[in-house]
Image 1 (spheres, helix red, strand yellow):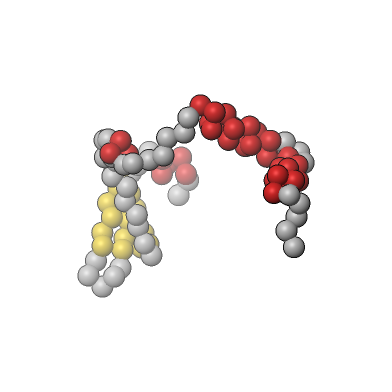
Image 2 (tube, one colour):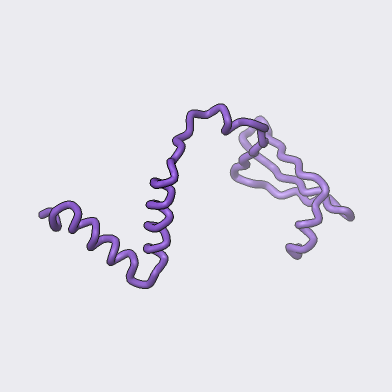
Length: 95
């Protein structure tokens, strides 16, 4: 089955059966394809889910620091430089 046809699926059905078997059915415009799967995860978006969680909030200085660290790591040799800087800040390599 070409991927282009799978993208056009109109429905998705997951059947969890009593014997522990799970099947996944894709409804395409011209047919329904059913395949056995070993597991299936379903994510149902909930509006405002993360707004209620006590997630950490970073101030502007902290965000700027981490943005610089991640930018440095992406540069060629950046990981080595970051490792050298962290050892230097700790007072040398630990033995």
